[in-house]
Length: 178
Image 1 (cartoon, rainbow, N blue to C red):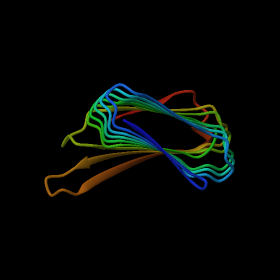
Image 2 (image 1 turned 60 degrees about the vertical axis):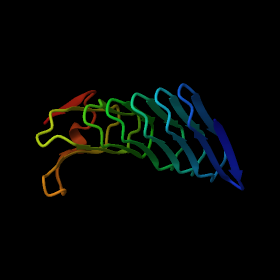
Image 3 (image 1 turned 90 degrees about the vertical axis):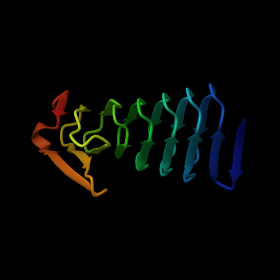
């Protein structure tokens, strides 16, 4: 079942399908875009050429491939997954945030911007997480940070942050092994 809702400039695409390929396109200048799926294998794609749109892609699927693309100049981009094995990819030239609570998901953040603020957050469910996080930037003055979190028995998160200086942010690939 797929439901598309348009309320003024707000665009929402919802699917509970098991194999649906979901794509949401917008050229709006201010529309908040949301793509939601509870499917088990859906390929989710959210595309926007908007100048200010807030883009959100959410999936609770177990194996979904999540991709968020934007050519916007100011759009805050958020890709969220609670999946256990989802491959998460976020492509943009601007402000990037990738959040995962997955236990095994490979997290990749790619940017071609010269002034991009990159944030990659992983809140692993393991007491001692073993995860590889890769941050790729082709920018020259990029400010980047990598955060890894461990959930303690108390239920609280212990977050460790690794910051990359701008001078080194132009490295083609940098990985953090926790």
